[in-house]
Image 1 (cartoon, rainbow, N blue to C red):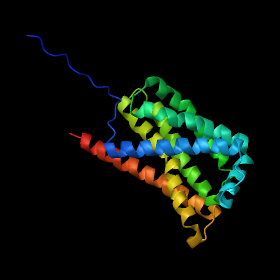
Image 2: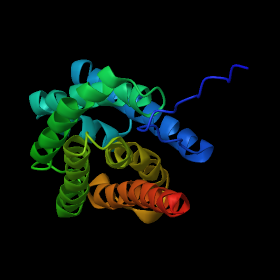
Image 3: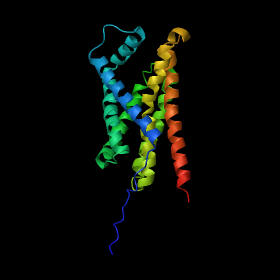
Image 4: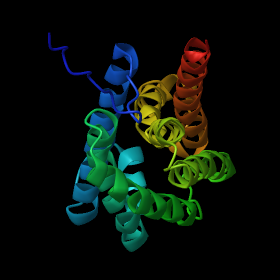
Length: 215
């Protein structure tokens, strides 16, 4: 009597729970849309619109080359993310490391011109460092698939915190008539809130998953 062949699972696979998967997809869509919108704002400035938004667009146009050097690889990174997290694509994963390094390095350069002053700059320095360290640890532990995937998931979710800042900023923009806060005042706060949400969420999940794996 023949026995059915054993089904082997890839040791580098991490089953992402449905709620986190949905949140990641939302962040991916928001991040992609934000980058595409920034490209259009750089190449075809709008002649009308809210003054605060026009002022932001002008600030980025003053540093157009650096902005493109940051958002172009960021768009590639975001596009690769589903293949790495949900398809376990080896070629996408290999590309993610150099592309992520470029995104992180240019993010440091972008922090020299923060909209939200030192509060925004401090958020970039903290969370970008966490992102780059996590990415480096994933690369360093590439011979240990399970550890590599954990650090890679951490790096990806932390980077996608930039997308979580967008709805937070939207709340600030929508309530600006009541709060009288300008982008210069709330951008840094939005950065801290958005990135913190993603970092806390991924850490809670990774730690709970690690505890559940213990015998």
